[in-house]
Amino acid sequence: MGYVAVKGGTKAIEASMKRVKYDRIKGEKVLDVHTIMSTMSAMVDQVMSESSLYSPFLAALSIKQAEGNMEEAVFLMRAHRSTLPRLYYSQALETKTMLVERRISASFKDIPGGQLLGSTVDYTHRLLDFNLVDESLEKNKRWLKDYETALQENVPSDHVHYYTKVVEYLREEGLFEKYALDNTDPVDITKESLHFPAPRSARLQVLTRGQTGAVTSLGYASLRGYGQVHPTVGEVRVGHVPIHVKHPNEIEDDAENDYYIGKIKITEVEAFVPVNIKNEDHEEELAFEIGYGVCYGQNETKAIAMSILDQCLEHPEYHFPTHDEEFVLLHIDSVESTGFISHLKLPHYVTFQSRLDSVRRVKKGRQ
Image 1: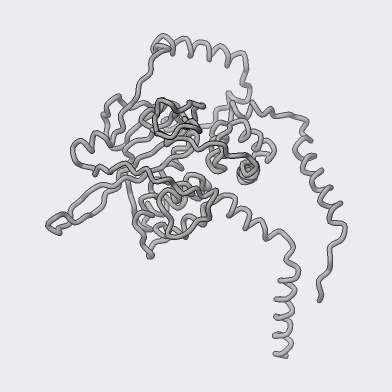
Image 2: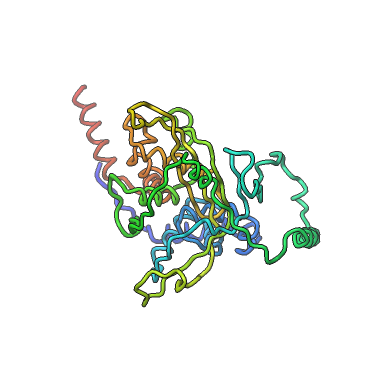
């Protein structure tokens, strides 16, 4: 059987696109982009992280256009990102200056500055709240006014407090190694192809923009026994960090001359991983290493899973897929994996007919 050309494809595609719009608006409801930004922050944060483009408005727009399909929303954001000019590279972030909204440690009950629970559903019952069915905007406004009044009474408006990293206290005790500052320019995986073995800067970039479910799944696989990296979360931080860029005409690095261009919300995790090392007497002893995770917005599960995989990939081990950087890094990208799976829906007439003809010849030869 020969290849049969498909005719009328353009008209069919145009009709399909109209059907997509019909399915989106047939309910005769309009979901405002700002409503998505205000009420679906977790989804917005996830899209921004996986697309590596920080813009709550564009993320909300992509969610609306994709009708809530996360993979499609990320695809749209990545495509838009590729059209944007890159005018500056920001200076390296210093997360010690984070304006913290949430900060907890699973390693210590008492940490300097205290546990700051912030906004989280970790301590709530997972029960459907049917009060949301008849939610009233007026009631919400009254609740907000009372909450903000109480907040201002307890926390001065000019109050700014920076929290020292938990790991710094352990470094002072000599329990964690101190490293010299490495100012080597990171590899930009959006400008250069990913090569193996990959430097840590490239690995962290792939992990932080990896598909949330995939990163979580592989992190969970490692916990279950595939490499069995079982850390203790030293610190989870959620908050805003300032972004600065260097003046284009400045030659010397002087932070005082940097320009502040805004802030972004991130989640940062430092996980303490027990490892066995050999001391000066060549005897094995217990020590700790740090697994690092960071992503846009508030996505703590992904950041923790990222910290697990970061530590896994620091110790390559061919027995375990979670320690194989090619396996991990090439299978967690949302656009790559979704695109490759989705391409199976496209015409494969020629290749399938060729295989079908081969099977027919074999069957015919056996008769």
